[in-house]
Image (cartoon, rainbow, N blue to C red; front, side, top):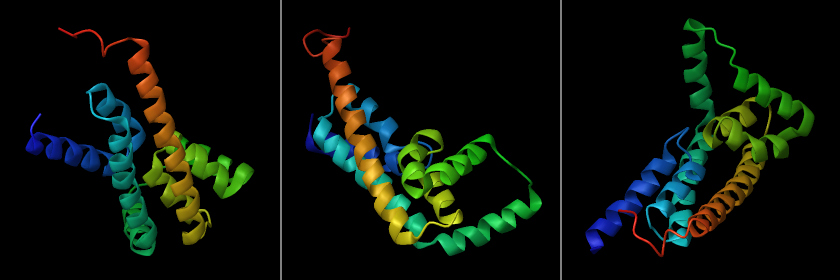
Amino acid sequence: MNMLELIWMYTLVFLLSAIPLLEAVIVIPFAIFAGMPAVQVTIIALIGNLLTVYFIIIFIEQIKKWRKNKKASKKSTERRSQRAERIWKKYGLPGLAIIGPLIVGSHITALMSLSFGGTKRGVTYWLTFSLIGWCVLAAILAHLGFDLFNTRDRELF
């Protein structure tokens, strides 16, 4: 693999991880299964995911105004939002930040945590901690699963 292909693959991992609902936790296993190195993929995917989450945290006031205008024309109470609110009421910010990325994704978790009353600092801390944990777990499980099927020692086609 030449340098240009490698840069393209890492750029793709970064960009896909930054897309809401297509989280780093999802991108990491696919990249590892594609044969990319687990440590580098995890770091790049985590950075891509965290940058967009931080973007949401920094610009939350503008996002709230945009959502309020959008909701005025569309009334929606989603099951995921209700589930996230129940988690918030029961476990607070740490609980939502830890379980939220699996239920609704990290971007929506950041938005909900701030909407439910979390501070920017607290949401930043807990979501960073949570995403690091989930990304490392996804990388480990993908790597172990990759080794479990012994795909490194045999050709796929």
